[in-house]
Length: 243
Image (cartoon, rainbow, N blue to C red; front, side, top):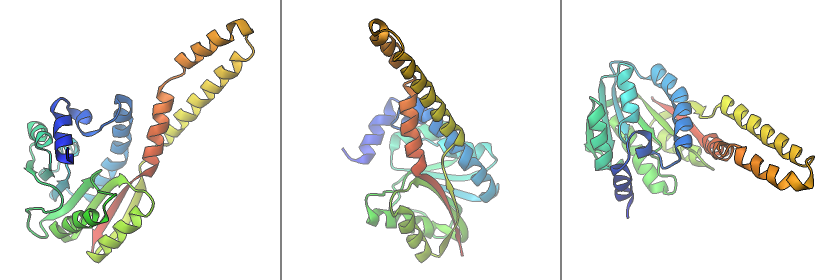
């Protein structure tokens, strides 16, 4: 099963963030919250209301809907999943096409802003180069390209080199993480550690019973939030400006 078939099958029985995030409800909730907190101010700063905006890999229109709510009217979304595009059309006024990011049927220098959120193919430098070259091709010379993804190892340097060859310079990098989330995890850890230590002061007869109680009461969210924090610590938003 290829990626297109995988996402089509996944989205057939799911909507909203569940259709575009293969994760638990808790992960989806907090990830969406934190991404909104970071991305929306960036959109407000770099995207004007009269701009023509393209989102490559738009999924079911989650971000295009939010751009529409912020007064952006000239929007085009593309995605290779027929089912996700169907969902996007049902809730957005924008124009949508079924297409992958490697051969856009769009004219050169058409868009003021091109947005790619969680669609960069990290494990294939050739596909990465093609996707970014296409983004640069369809974006105006003085336009902007906004990327958000989980950048690991030399990903950011690879992206910067490809973009520079297309005359797009990195003007902003913003990590996607939450101090509030970090504090919450620290608090949950302390809560668990305190309960665990208390179990050692209870008689041997009741220790096992108390420990089970601690395990059951200790939020499973602690584990999930740790996973989320690790994932978000790799995620960043990059803004490139044409020159």
